[in-house]
Image 1 (tube, each protein chain N blue to C red):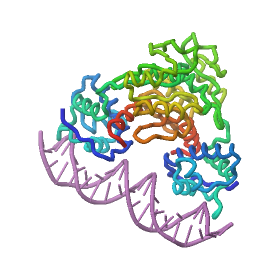
Image 2: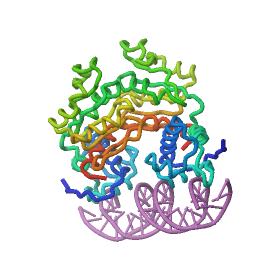
Image 3: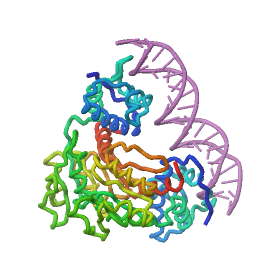
Image 4: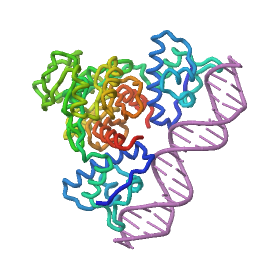
Amino acid sequence: MASFKIPKNISEATVIRLSYYLRCLNILKKEKIKIISSKGLEERFQISSVQLRKDLAYFGGFGRRGKGYNVNNLLKTIIKILDLKREKKVIIVGAGHLGQALADFQGFNSLGFKTIALFDKDLEKIGKITKKGTKILSVDLLEEFIKKEKVKIGVIAVHPSSAQEIYDRLTNCGIKGILNFAPIQIKEKEGVVMLNVDLKIRLETLSFYLKNRR
Amino acid sequence: MASFKIPKNISEATVIRLSYYLRCLNILKKEKIKIISSKGLEERFQISSVQLRKDLAYFGGFGRRGKGYNVNNLLKTIIKILDLKREKKVIIVGAGHLGQALADFQGFNSLGFKTIALFDKDLEKIGKITKKGTKILSVDLLEEFIKKEKVKIGVIAVHPSSAQEIYDRLTNCGIKGILNFAPIQIKEKEGVVMLNVDLKIRLETLSFYLKNRR
DNA sequence: CCGTGTGAAGCTGTTCACAGCT
DNA sequence: AGCTGTGAACAGCTTCACACGG
């Protein structure tokens, strides 16, 4: 497999597209397609062939001129670029419907990720397991557990009123990446990456585009 | 309240920020703050004052030079721009944990939106209600219900394998806006707005930034 | 000759600097 | 004097055109 470099200033848009290319390549792999051109990907999926070549070129040259890309090699390369080869442990705080949905969601337990525990303060929930078998622990054990298991990714799926507290606790005991679902602005700490998934904002954006076609 | 225009080519980034400004203004309103300058918003929330003025200027001039913005008026104006004044009915397909989380989520039942039903094919779930009281109906009634209630917004929270089918059914009976949570590329129809919330892509993006600090 | 990779052009969104109201 | 609103500069991302290698 070709080696790659990771330059500075890769845009978030590019990273998102890489993740999408990965999904497409997995489909092709299942269909036992070995080689595909950027044009082929464009026709099959909603991908811009020029954009794809540009995106890949940031990291190196992975295609064969006149031929196209080796599906399997490109797959492996993108997996390495996104750092999905190592399995990273994930914990979710908040075992409401959202937390449980995420714990059992395939994407949170596929290549690169393993959700190993949910945390909640509700005594009714503590000690139980989700449908797919993730255990629910007391939020009192949060710090201890994260340190012992060396967890690096945390998901905030609690009520907005506790989100900042949970953020502080997570980042104080070694969590380096956070996916936040609480619809509030968190006061962030240096050296921690956080991505927000703000469903209220998403819905309001949809409302705007319903009235004013894109 | 000042009137506004909606020009073509408003970027999604601007719409997302408007939604966020709205959230901040609501906080100020609760604190009974009547007037605030763009600089004041910048200091209080993570907002760029220049960006805010630019964003608002696309739609008109809502501030008072030398003074700032009237919190209440600006609030009302953004509500109108985002078209949140009319209450829009929302239905969710898929009454798994995710669907139920969304149905009970405050943001899906606040200004501008009312989630009026969940749909599922599971006989165990049909006829029950969520914690906060949204009823779960048979997915067989989907089209009939949407037409009768004139629902315009649908949420896809089903397994990826049924997502395209549900998309087609929703768009064939009058749904005009869709929030899709299934991690697949949907074949879209002209005249329907769809926003994707792709949690797998989100998590993979986080993985990249964990390795390569932004 | 075909498809990748890339420098340059074009475009879109953000930041700057300041003119114009209050 | 203070703060908004805006044209112009700037930066970043996307698209184009084509040189290059298989």
